[in-house]
Length: 382
Ligand SMILES: Cc1cc2nc3c(=O)[nH]c(=O)nc-3n(C[C@H](O)[C@H](O)[C@H](O)COP(=O)(O)O)c2cc1C
Image (cartoon, rainbow, N blue to C red; front, side, top):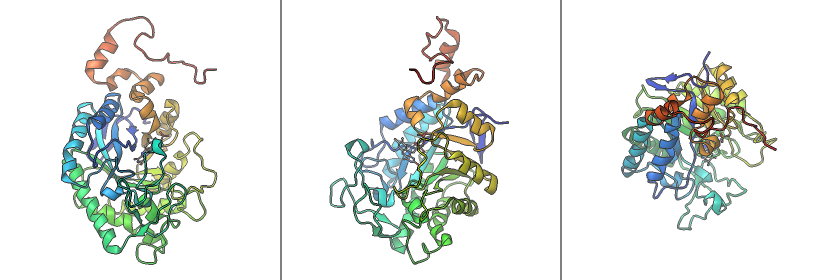
């Protein structure tokens, strides 16, 4: 029976455990370029024992960013900055992963701490957002959406392929397509955002054409022996939006186009969700387990899995193959070492670089002096 610390092999890549630093947009890039900050962020999590390490959604085009300070890969000039990140991740024993994406109608945003509202197309840091149909998201996203023409969709698919070629050159060994969270891929799949009457809309089959063609374009340059995965918006939690049964079908379809693993997440194509489960522990796990069971494909899952015992049980029950951690990876760069200790794993320090683990194993001191909370710490201190 696997557990959180079992290795995981997909195609030619073996990850040392089941713990993934989930993609997280950081608003720290300049003209799409990553910097020392990104080397620090990814390197420290790799040194803390994460098996697979993502940065953030990396934009395939400038208008595919969340905001003007998000990272991109639309130019060969972006390769070297990303290569520094992948070298550090590998040096620390983890596998470097890239999430390629386009934000579609949810782009042109201000930073969250500046209000997270959308900037108008004529603002120096904003742009004209594009999507499957001219339907504004609403809420914080107020500006008109330009409907993509078929030639423009083809250009986006070329941009995916060019981005994948650059990702390979930068040393990434795992590629995830971002088709979730209301961004372009998610919006093509959702009847709420996609009301086209042509071959990219109008039926369930057509609403998945964008994804099939994107996968095919990426597979022309991304080697067969490296994992090609996706994060899928599998449910809009709205009667008019993506229905989970359709998502199960979509995963099976995309498998025929070279999909190796599905990371099951939310659609987020509308704010009008019915009973949003954001406060519930492990709320995506059942959906991920159903995809794994019914499609017979490895799956990853995130959302509220930061308690080690809970994450470990998901793997032991074979509900998912990988645990994606977002906020826990921000809160605790050593989450995997901490979890290994909490779960009584033999030699938790083996997940760290030897130049740290040697000292932590060999140097004697008083109880607790190495800086970990006691194993049986109170979970809810009064
Ligand atoms: C700061 C932040 C930025 C995020 N950016 C992305 C992103 O770029 N791509 C993505 O797919 N998900 C993104 N997410 C979602 C996370 O990857 C993750 O799925 C979500 O936070 C749920 O996991 P958690 O409960 O462990 O935080 C982001 C989350 C956070 C907290």
